[in-house]
Length: 222
Length: 222
Image (cartoon, rainbow over all chains, first blue to last red; front, side, top):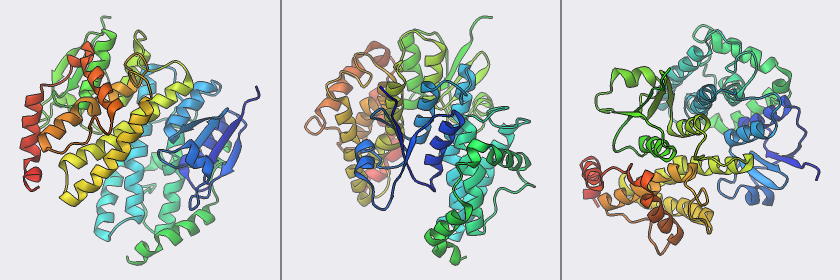
C-alpha cells in the first residue's frame, strides 16, 4: 500500500508548523490541507473530536494529534535524521524542555505581549523573563538545544525563535533582547536560517497584520 | 557501579505516586524520600530548580522531573513489563490520553469539587462530565486503558481512579457515578485492586482530612 500522509494545519499556527518542520527535516513527503479555523472542516472534527484543533497528522487513515505527540510519532516512524537523542536520560531532558516551552515560557511571553490589562501584562512580563532565563541557561555553549543539530526542543521552540518576535513587533512589547538573552537571540538567528525551518515560517507581515486585528484593542489601550 | 535510584515524593501526591506505581509494576527497587512541601529540602531545590516540585527521580545522580517524563524514562530504561505499547501509533494514542488526563479531565474534576465559587464549580462540573465521557468512550470493552495490562494511561489516570473519589468524598460533590460512567467505575475498581497500585495509594482517611483542612472554607459556603 502506498503511504498516505496528510497534515491538517493552519498557516499561522506555530503548532502545525512544528509538524511541517519535522517532516521537512526528515525529508518526508506529505499533503498539506489548510484548515479554516473559523469554519472547521468535517475532516478536522472527525479526526480530532476531542480538541477540534490543528495540527492533525493522518497517516494511512489514522489520526495523531497534539503537536508534541505528533513529533514523537514522526521520530519513531521515520528514523532518519532523529529529532530525539537515543539515550533515555537525554530523551527525558529534551521532553522536559519541550514541555516547559509548551506550557510555561510561551504562554507567559504571549500574555506579556497581548492579553489582559496592563497590570497583568507587567506581571506576565516578569514571569516571561524568568522562564526565558531558564532557556538561556539551558543553551549553555550549544548551537541548538539539540546540540549540533535541530531537535525536539528547537522545533518546539519555534514559538520563541520566531513567533515571539512577531508578537513583540505587533504589540510593541520587547522581551527577547540581545542584552538580556544573548544566547537565545543567537539561537533564534541560527534556527530561522536552517532551510527546513525557514521554508516553514509564515510571512511576517501577514502574521503581524492578523495579530493586530485580533489584539489591536488591548494594545491600543496602553 | 551499583545503581542508585532515589525518589523525592510526597505521600498524598498522585503525581509522585504514579512514579512509585510504575517502579513497583516493574519490580525496581528504589529509595523513597518524603518531601515536606511546606519546607522544601535543598535536594529538591537542587534537583528541580525550575519547578521545585515532586516527583523527582534521581538515577545515579541524574534527576528526571515531571511525572509523565519520568514514566517514559522508566519505560525506556527498564524494559520489563512495558507500560507503553511498542507500535508507534499506539504509543502516540497512549501519550495523547495521558496528556488529556493530566491537562484536561483531572483539572476540571478537581475544580468542580473544590475550587472557586458555586457558579464556577457548576461550570467545572459540566466540563468534568464532558471530559470523563471521552474517557468512558475510550475504554470501550477494554479492562484497562492499556488493554489487558496496566499502562501509561492507567497510571496517569490514578488521579481519576482514586484521588477523584477522595476529593468527591471530602467535598460532597459527586461526578463519577456508575449510572453515568459505568465503564470508568469498573475500571477504577479493577485499577485499585491491582497489587502494585493498591500498595501505592495513600490512606483515604488521611487524604480526606488533609483536603478538608485545605478546602473546608469553600465547601462550607455551599
